[in-house]
Image (tube, rainbow, N blue to C red):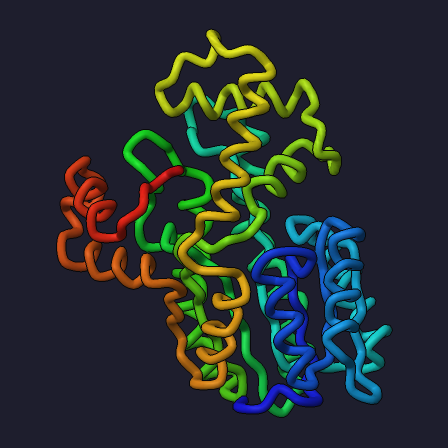
Amino acid sequence: MKDFAGRIAVITGGGTGMGRELARQLIAEGCNLALCDVSAAAMEETRRLCSVDGLRQGQRITAHVADVADTVQVRGFRDAVARDQDTDRIHLLFNNAGIGGGGSLIVNGQDEWERTFNVCWGGVYNCTRAFMPLLQKADAGHIVNTSSVNGFWAAIAPHIPQTAYAAAKFAVKGFTEALITDLRLNAPHIKCSVVMPGHIGTSIVANSRKVQSGNDSDVMTPKEIAQARARIASMGRDATALSDDDVRKIVAERAKRFLEEAPTSAAEAARIILDGVRNERWRILVGRDAEQLDARVRSAPERAYEPDFFASFEAEAGWRLGR
């Protein structure tokens, strides 16, 4: 699939970050879009930006509010795509939605842990299962599943546990690799790719807080403060000495730094992903940091979770892990 013009692409997590940038770049190439996100306002902004960039005659962008962790909502999303796009087929499925949270199995609560796992892994499975019949009816198809460097390295820093997110991203990677053979045997016109980004400049930190709590406001609720306090405690820090305002400041600063100090922008990440799809690459590393981590983990897997591994990578990469 070298040319996206006239194709129909489904993008989950299309309201912000890499999902938004994939939408903008696909629109620029003449692709039709069906976006999914839990935030209607975020998707509306994506639609506005795509319209500002310019639409071709007859080009469609539809937006659908759905939680990808919920199978009923995903089926409803699929049916809405078929209705609003007036089609029984799609060509591209970007399983991009994801959140953080539930880093520690011990300190963080079960609800937060499972929410992260069910979005990051369950969303990929639910959408692939739901949209497979529409992909099968197309003349060509491609499934693009967003994993992470945490799909081959289950860490983020020596002082930050990452169990729910890493477990989900390992599942996404394994699922996609297994799909290669399954598709070759049973749907050979459909390809698949696993995307493994490093640190990309997105608002996943801020968005994860909102999704975990169900609060779309920028003002943190008592529940969110408690969750943030638990995350701080899971890093070995005495969170009891922090006031609520201290917690709010820590959360806001982390979200800001994650977005602004990333070595790779969301737009650059989207370009790398789309180039990978054009070239039918099943494994797409995104960012120099992802490439460096991949090489290091492969060369010394037994050392991958030792403090000296973190320190040597930080020295090579020139920026600090787990900011």
